[in-house]
Image 1: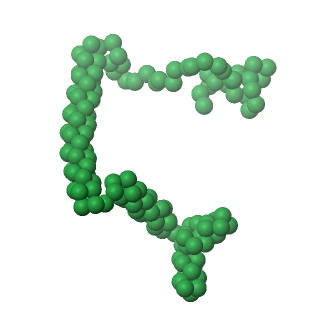
Image 2 (image 1 turned 60 degrees about the horizontal axis):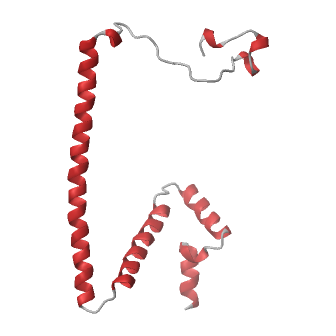
Image 3 (image 1 turned 180 degrees about the vertical axis):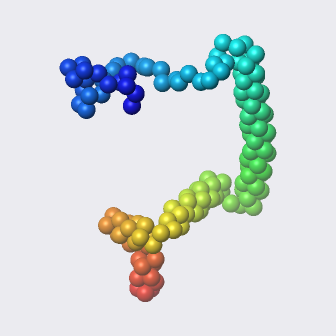
Length: 143
């Protein structure tokens, strides 16, 4: 907190800190102050603009790669349909399996034994025992 933020008690909020509305600049003047030097400003603006242009090129390349992969996926679905597999249920199975992997990764991301225990306890309190290792073992014992 700067000295300028401290006000007399009658103009201040709790703890003697000035309560303000609106936006205040927190920029600190730097040594050499290049804000008024057009060469320095042009240099940094140019560098930032070049990096943004590089970023856009990378995004375009990524999108083209994704487009090619999406076309491959579409082709595989069409081949499956030609073999008699209905497309909609096949998509649902693929989506469900991807979601199951994400769900499993949620628990796998917890590396601390205390977090794993807390996770299992919270899942059990929600009634989701069948998804936990202990619940799966119990379900296996019933069959």
